Length: 115
Length: 115
Image (cartoon, rainbow over all chains, first blue to last red; front, side, top):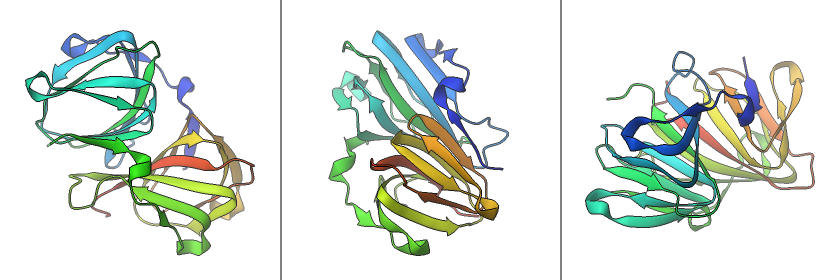
C-alpha cells in the first residue's frame, strides 16, 4: 500500500555514534518494510557534527537546507550546500561539521543489505 | 572518491514515458557507478504529469518543493507536499499530476537491480 507522511511525523532520534553532537535522524521506513534501501533524514544544528567514520557501504545524499563541511580522508574539508548531491563510496572516511548559523538537513540513503 | 555537485550541473532530460508532460529527470550517478540504488531528481511544471504506470520495484520519494496529486489504484487521488516522504511498493499503480501553480521537485530512489 502506498504511504506518505510529513517528515516531522517520524520519530526524531539523537545520533550519538562517532562522537556526533547536535545531530538527529529520522528513518522513513523500517528495515523490515524497505525492499532494497533505507531513506533517512538527518539534521545537524549549528556547531554540531557527525564524527569521521567509514563502513563498507555507500551513501547517496541530497542536501535540503544549509551548508555543511564534509571531512574526508586525511582531514580534507569541502563545503557542500543545499541542492547538492553527494556520493560517498564504500570504505571512504567521511564526517560532517556544521560551521554555519543554520540547521543543515539532508537525505541520506543506505542499502538495506550492507555488504 | 567522494563526489558532490549541484543538481543543476546534471543533464536535465525530458520524461516522455507513460504520457508524461512537462516533466524532467536528472540522474545523480550512473547505473554503472551506483553500487545498489539510483538517486534521481524530478521536476513537474504546473499542469504537467507523469502518467499512471506500475513496475515490480519500489520507489522511495522525498518531496522538495510544491504539492503534487498522487494518483493510485482505481484513480484514487491524494495530495502530497513539500517535506513528505512517499513509499510506493512494487507493483502499485502510481502517477502524478501537478495541479498547482508551482513547479514540483522530488527525489525518487529506485533499486539498481530491478527485480
